[in-house]
Length: 173
Image 1 (cartoon, rainbow, N blue to C red):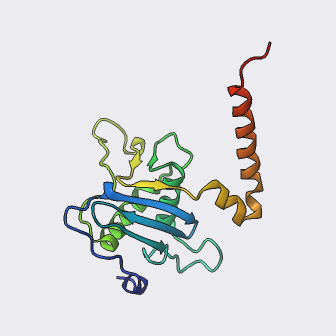
Image 2 (cartoon, helix red, strand yellow):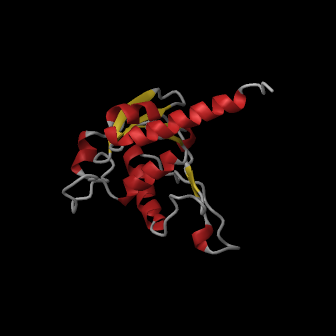
């Protein structure tokens, strides 16, 4: 295992713990808060380096690899990437295989963290990727506060809220 994994090993989990007991909440693009229920009551912040997702070829941001990017994309789509999603990419298949192994090793769970996809009747590219755990992106308020680049995202969110309020108001004709 990677040195960072040894330094930040996740606590051993109780027997019977499954991926459905996990919640991943991204704090930013490099860190995720992982909580585990089922009597474990464990919560720990881990980074992309803890999961060996650092890309040593990169010297500038982002420093993480395609497996961490897949995890970020899964969070942005609340756990499932379908073929019609903007996050669906050809390289996801290999990234998913590697991410699966890293998650299994880091959390000491032998089960597949992804639901299996039946591709027997269709082209493999058409399969979706769905995580067995709950996963959530960085809260929009936090993103907007932490980065000026995200003024655009905040503006879109505020416009959406304003439009929804207009739609929810009773017709005053």
